[in-house]
Each structure stands twice: as structure tokens, then as C-alpha cells.
Length: 330
Image 1: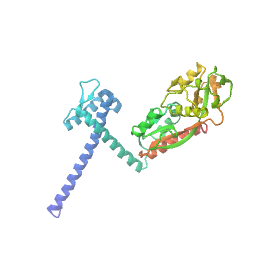
Image 2: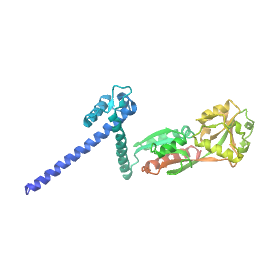
Image 3: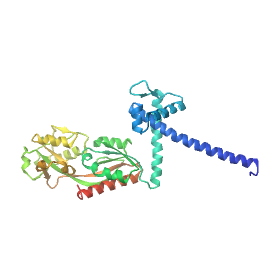
Image 4: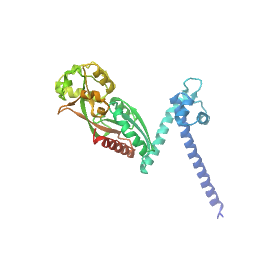
């Protein structure tokens, strides 16, 4: 069968190498699973919650974490504490585990991209003046059309979104264009006009169109700092007045601002995409801002290092389709 002993040894060497390599690959996969379970326990503070998060039974998760501890020869979690916390060795391993899982996922996502698959994870930030009015329009279709994409969505103010993009805590965001700065790519999606929402007790209530110059700044209530729409409105008003003003009421949501307007004599500025959610009996409180008033461009912002272009395209295409199906534009 073999011409000489050397050939037989060479064949056996190749067989041994193959099985050793296969074992190591299998071990690496198990290690990734173990590291994911370890991270889940550390994040959730308990084995039961971690098991729910990972969609496995608690005994199975506990067994994998225990196996990892035995392999490393150290205790990684202090189970006597409630919540469960990492030991000193566990904290070190957790730092490395995060890096390892991130690299592992990056490899899988790059390969999926090369294969032309729309698959992988996208961590998406959305600003509060967009999230309530846009997410429900495109998410059902996106989930249905791209089942292999894991979409993780966080509602965040613009300043936090920019910080998260720069620190690699999110991959992309739906924002107002021009607000993210250098190092972040923006792809514009559609325009969103501004309107004035006026209290029936305000003199501007009887008007149909309102100029920015006609707004009494002491009546203007705004979003809290960190929201880009607040900055846009302040810039617009001050450009027309050449003055600063201290705003007496601020809120993190447009809905709260509108409720304040309803019970006072104040006014606020709202985006066009919010109009559909104003009850019919309060539609008269919406006033068109006269020519020269600004609008905003809605955009998807992406980290320059983000490689999953197929997911970005899927996201933008689905959003644009949802907006067009609604009314052509917002």
C-alpha cells in the first residue's frame, strides 16, 4: 500500500494534523460560546437572566461557564454575591472576551459581505425627534425582508449618538444631516420641514402662516440640550434676531413640549413627520412657517470603518420605500 516507511509516516502525519486542526476548530467554537455565556452572566448579574437572554437552559449555560473556569484553572465569577460579579481574574478574562467576540463577529460579517449576503448585526441609534415617527414605518418590512440581520436599536440624543459612533458603541444612526462631524459618513434620505405648534392663547393662533421674526422668544419652548433640533431652532431664531434668550422650559420629547403648549400660551417648533400624530381637534394649532424658514435633512450616519455596506443599503432602501409609500415625502 505504501512504497516505503517514510511515505506511511508522512500520511499518518497529515491525518494527525487534520484531526488536531479539526479539534482545535471545534474547541475554538466552544470557547466562543463559553465566552458569550460568561459575558451574559456578567451583564445580567445572574445565571437565570443570562440563560433567558441567550435562549438556553440555565443548567446548560452554567455547565459551559464552569467548563471554561476548569479549562483556565481559575474562578471567574463570584456566585456568593447578588448580583453575581466577576472575580479579579474574571474581570481580566471578560475584557479579553469582549475583544475576542468582537473580532470573531467581524470575521463572520466580512465573510458574509464578501459572499454578498445581507447578514450580521447592526447597532442603530435614532434621535428622539425621529424615533416615534419613523421606526414603525420601516422596521416590520426590514425584519421580514432581511431575517439574517440582527437590528439593535437605541434612542439617543444627537450628542450621545456622535460619541457612540466615535467610540464604536453603535454602527450607524438616523439623524439630522450635518450634525455628526468629521469621521462619520452621512447619506441623506429625505427632507423634513419645520412647523410651528401654537397655543390657542397665543396671538399667533389666528394666523395661517408665521414668520420666524414674529415669534416672541419668551413664548418659545425647546428640546433640552443635546438634541440637534434644539440647536437648529436656536440658530434659526438668533440668525433672524441677532440676540440670545434664556428658554424657560425645556424637555427631552416633542410630545411633552406640545402638551406644555396646550396648557399655556407658548409655542414650539415641530417636524413635519410629527403632524400625523396630532389629534384632529388640535390641527388648527399647526402653523406653516413662512418662506425662508428652515427644514432638516434626515440622514443615515455611518462609521467610516463599518464594512457591512449591504446592511446599510438594505436599511436606507427600506426607509426610503416606507417614506415614499406613505405620501411621497414627509
